[in-house]
Amino acid sequence: MVFYFHDIIYNGHNAKNATSAIVGSPQWGNKTILTGQNHFGDLVVFDDPITLDNNLHSKPVGRAQGFYIYDKKDIFTAWLGFSFVFNSTQHKGSINFAGADPLMNKTRDISVIGGTGDFSMARGVATLMTDAFEGEVYFRLRTDINLYEC
Image (cartoon, rainbow, N blue to C red; front, side, top):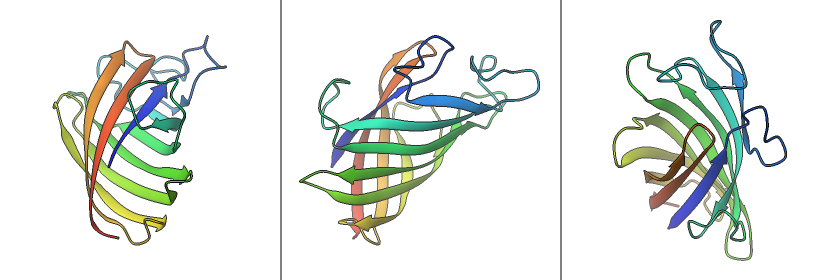
């Protein structure tokens, strides 16, 4: 299964369109702009649309909901915990993910740690690839999901 999720980070000017927000930052940071070169210490919560193609304006098939923490001071990397929540004619339920995301790698694997509904007891691996990146405001991830149990 291949899905795309679209993250629009609140930057102080885009509240109407933002799908994520910085909810925690180090003492030297703020909650409107990502901190420093590697964003170390920022905690971002998101509720992003999931689409079947890479067009932000395509009809969503669900939502990617969770958080990411920029967790290394010297390398651009994050730790993710999130769910794909589906409520469409094709899929109902959720797929849950967790793990490290070394953002500078072209592809990265993250664990599928569970699911509900159509994906009850899901286990597997999802391969993430940054499909688009527009400065500090927008990114799109391609997610290839391989389930081994369901």
